[in-house]
Length: 245
Image (cartoon, rainbow, N blue to C red; front, side):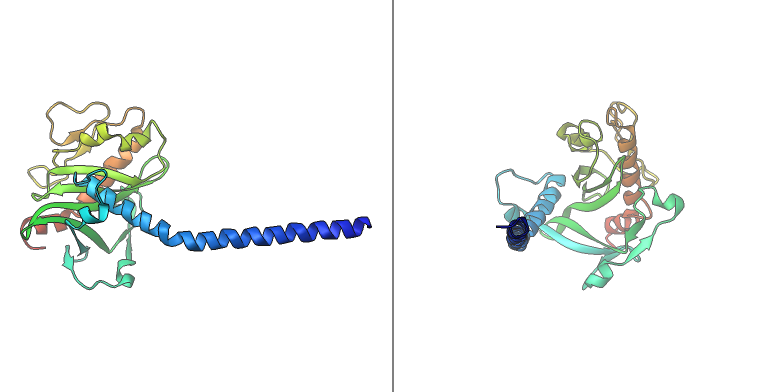
């Protein structure tokens, strides 16, 4: 057998193997995609429940999530709306200059929010939030009591901050510091602030900064101020408190 024939057969074997492998990988991707999407949706719901302090480890997430009602807020009128189309949900408003303190570039014109109700009475509201930290955009939820001011919890389900530093946003001890804090001052301005270092004892508007992660702390501080402020959920929360949402 000539070297040319040997080389040809080798190439045929390699190409055949590559083809078989590509078919296997493609098939696996198609087969696994529904499972991945299901797991992603479950994780999303799990984080909503965790922010609201309602997650029971080991219990069925879907069953727990039945306690949650999903509604849509229109930022143009700062009230709930019905029958929002996918096209409307994709609409965004560009944020310019100081308005973009969270460094997200745009804000969706509509946002889904998550309610915990009992006998038709609001008990908690969970709000999606996001903003840029040091290395990444942090995506999470802030949960408030029915007074729309007292914080129930804050948690992030996606970010790329440095483990052991900015990644400490996931530390249960740090997250527990938010519970019971208040977002707004008596005049309605956003008062919640992450301090540099330990917060003053007993201050209801201040939370300890993350040690060694000044820029991540500043990013979280900015995103909270944005979403709780006039360009975010602030006017909607005011309407909700007044029973006009």
